[in-house]
Amino acid sequence: MLQYTILVVDDEKEICNLIKDYLVKEGFNVILAYDGQQAINYYKEFNPILAILDIMLPIIDGMEICRYIRSQSNIPILMLSAKKTDIDKILGLGLGADDYITKPFSPKELVARVKAHIRRYTILSSQKTNPSILKYNNLEIDIKGYNVSVNGNKVDLASKEFEVLSYLALHPNQVFTREQIFNHVWGFDEYGDINTVTVHIRRIREKIEKISSEPMYIKTVWGVGYKFEGVE
Image 1 (cartoon, rainbow, N blue to C red):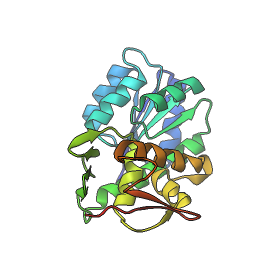
Image 2: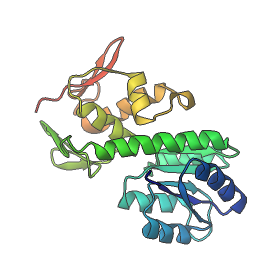
Image 3: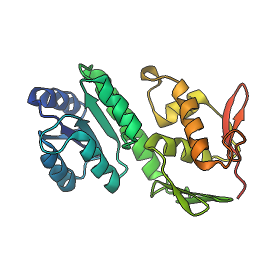
Image 4: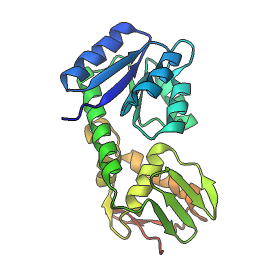
């Protein structure tokens, strides 16, 4: 059985060891780092499939580590924080983190989220039959590169916005409910708010549509959900 490596970064060694104990029981290989520089060094050395980052860290903080990893890879990144305001900051800055959890947290919940993110990431990575670049009119989606452009101009999408858009675009004219989109992109419906799908759709439209209130690509199917209707 393939053993996945997870990088856990927190300056509180007790928290690191607690997370490690739970993840090792599930068959994961866990690398611990206690400051930001060590985290970056271990990321380069061990090539983890997922990173769990505390925000407040010595030398280099978790937000900068998140930026660095996201510039190198699209592996799942989970952020830890003792303050809700830090989570708001993560979302506002659009750092590319895939999930967040506030302290104190349930180790079992954390493990469930880790498994869901790895499952989704490995499925997306193995979908080699899908084209790597989708082109619809003036919209271009680079699936592997996590890039989107309109009329040749790059569009900055947050990680989850990109995953919602690519999921719909890979299945043109297929209608998906909000629940289906949420379960595919976030992967654990018991921990999230389904309304986040509506918020992400609105943000995507504002970035890729000429007139967001009259969308060309992501159409609302009233009473059902959404579908991607681009014409190649």
